[in-house]
Image 1 (cartoon, rainbow, N blue to C red):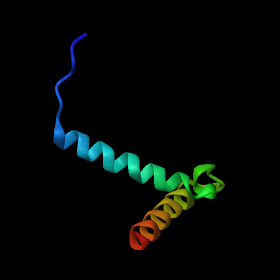
Image 2: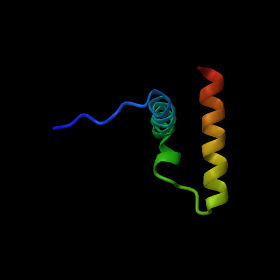
Image 3: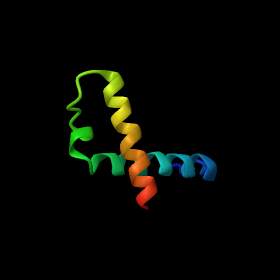
Image 4: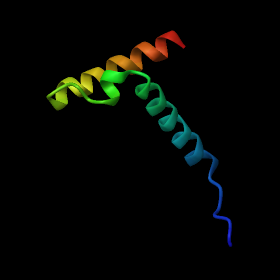
Length: 56
């Protein structure tokens, strides 16, 4: 079985996205999508990411 080539830049970006989703899943209302409209859902995501990045 051949090992695919490793791209450190792509891996760093992928890891950043995965950690952001992990932080989002800590917030139950965002993870289960209680908001009815896409605009409110996006606003909730932005708010959660801003709060979690500010705290950490």
